[in-house]
Image (cartoon, rainbow, N blue to C red; front, side, top):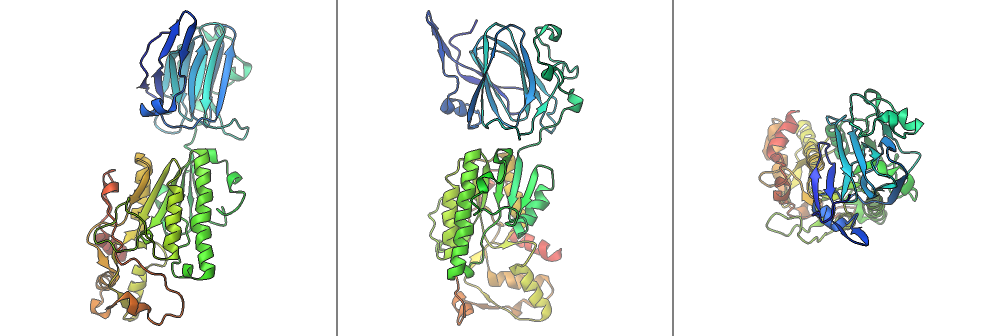
Length: 469
């Protein structure tokens, strides 16, 4: 008999991410009423906001009907409308939890959240039982499923009714044993801009596991009208957008302006639509150029943007779009140095070739090395930090470009006095092509990301390491 008057509460289970819920059921002589799924109340208790899109019901006429064990590539909210079941779940996700088992009885006063990749099965304990589940993807024949046999001795599920006396389909009886079950891989991670400096650093950090995918513009064009169907997007958990139009001076030309808006706004908007529609976490890399550089203190994440040039305008617009998606990390950075053409390596080359450069001394900020940027992005994802905007640069004392150039000369064994400091106006005086305005102060406040447990590397120390290697 259904228990009435329970308090809504969630109870963790031995399977990671799977939560058993008690549901308040209100009854009288007419019958009963319950809120079977209430997003606001249940997410407040820790249930993932998993975004269901389909509701399925399995009606079972007799006692002993046994179904499962099926692991699908979507999350499920499982409950009972009428009757009672013995439920069994086996974790088939790749990782240390593989093979973990949990069982519980469900009636209308109990429900359970079953994460993607956890096999679901049940046995009816009363006639006319209706077993229901909300899922956050539409059924698809193209999806990858995994199964485990109901009678597997290593799983050892204590079915109340012996399986030889149960009503089971031939298909369910033929499922593989746990030793031969196909592990369910995590949802895929897609890194865009794979050939760029940050893209290469992300590959070094994330590796080449089967569920990690890297793409260039040739592989996936964000401006294509077919983007929405270019992948089975429900199979993706994370998209890291490390691609952008970063030619800040070229963006001031008519052709460059169009290219910057296409890559940094139109493409980002299309990507945001995909992420929002399919429950994907979107990581978007932004820039100090969204600020005008007039602040005497480090910029915080919630400071108003005030971009000076076209590039900064497109990045600010892209940030606003990404911020509208439910699951997002906007990672603002500055003065990025990585594997490829960059300021530090250019200065080292000039020093070696005997060239004495003129370098601006009225722009102040911190270097950010791509391995640190990739490490910070991985940290936000691994720790499931609260969604939002995070500043991420190197730590330590801010420097001007001229100070950094002199330090590069010193670290490479050359006289730092060979670097001549000049103002930005002097440096670009007489330029033949359009020049983008630069923020004079690009120092970003790092306290928010530090509060998540991430410690950025000191920029001066990272510079010395970069030169040494």
